[in-house]
Image (cartoon, rainbow, N blue to C red):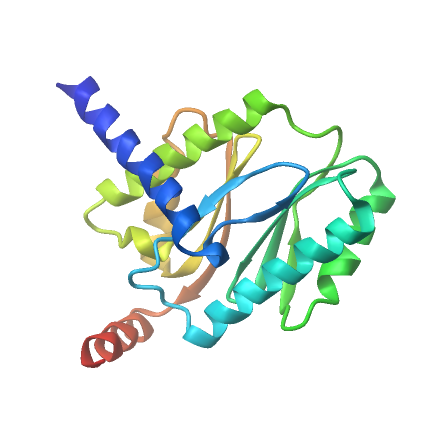
Length: 211
């Protein structure tokens, strides 16, 4: 029974990731030279509509500019959440790594850039497939957690490191981190949350119910 249950959860998580890619481009990383996996279920997005539009624009502009400059020489993933941009992937040299950050910093509406790119050869297909599987497991675990709103989290996996983004309370951040760290295939968890108070969360939920 346990194995069947785990398979169902994992399948749900992978389907959520796939559906996400088809439904809203702002909620998956745009990529030069390959693909990473990320997603946030948008049914109850805690960002403003303006921030969501800005994030979509930031990702499109950043990846286009990186592509225009480097072509397929780098593998860079661009993920924007509430105007904070996460860069993951691989670049051949330290100079190229620095240039990528400079390009993204100049994109309109970017509030800050978190550079997690590595100076190394591009990751293999098997590594990226493994990252896809890990992301599916993470999202399934968050969906399974009855004390969390899974659609409040954006998940990005790169070479076994899971990046968690979202506007969440401290309790939600700690609980999600605790759960993700127990998942097989997760080598490290990096938290890039925007912490909000319980009062702020209640206010957002009340406003959405009124609308």
